[in-house]
Length: 303
Image (cartoon, rainbow, N blue to C red; front, side, top):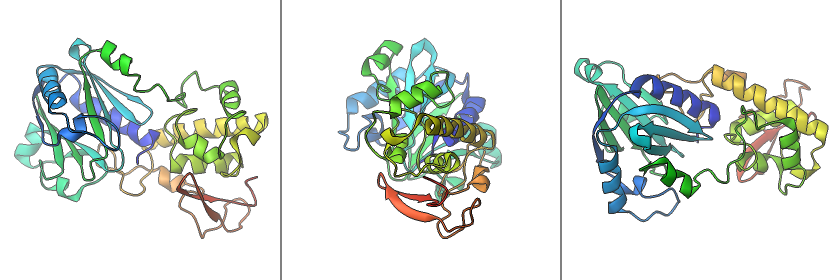
């Protein structure tokens, strides 16, 4: 699943390409994707019809992000929320690119078929815009693309009610972070990834931040001292800023909107480095499981 830096780069790329374009038509091939956000979703033909009727004729006026969600704002305060989950992908193709067989703009998890054929069997939502097509492709269909007719309806659902602070926001202060951790049950890495205190961190950036702060990922969150909390807070901000700047991490199957791979993977100190030596003390990294995820750390440096 893409983490905050990858989704932020995708947001920037989409905004550059679809802003102010009008939605001329929408084809929804898999109503499940617009019917809800849970693991088990009941297909709603009504929501499919509302989605199509609601967005046709509207323009994209902004592309924003909250945690790992993309927030598409349309004219008349209409909103579309999208989450790629494990295998979602957005592909934008301007009409001239289709005519000339030019380079496609693809962001999200790579789907080989999308490189040569659009739409394809994984293209489940197709927007025809003023200047091209925007496709939502998803091989496993865990993602969602939800429509809200106005801001009031969206806010009433409290879609982001359980989310914590954005790591680069003014709310994410050292004081907020320490106060949130000091009574929190659970291992620190699992707490970082559950999105309730700080959003957008997954396996990659949790491992990297904890390594930089010299904190074991299996430590209880409430055991973290104020000094350690400050070090971790500083590490999270530095690493997220840097990862956004260089385009995220090119690991697993994630790719960016301009068809390139993120460069932050070249700077990983610990993630995916099991069997290698710690760059600080030269001892071999240790592997464990925290929150159901493979976790790499240095037993010597991280306490």
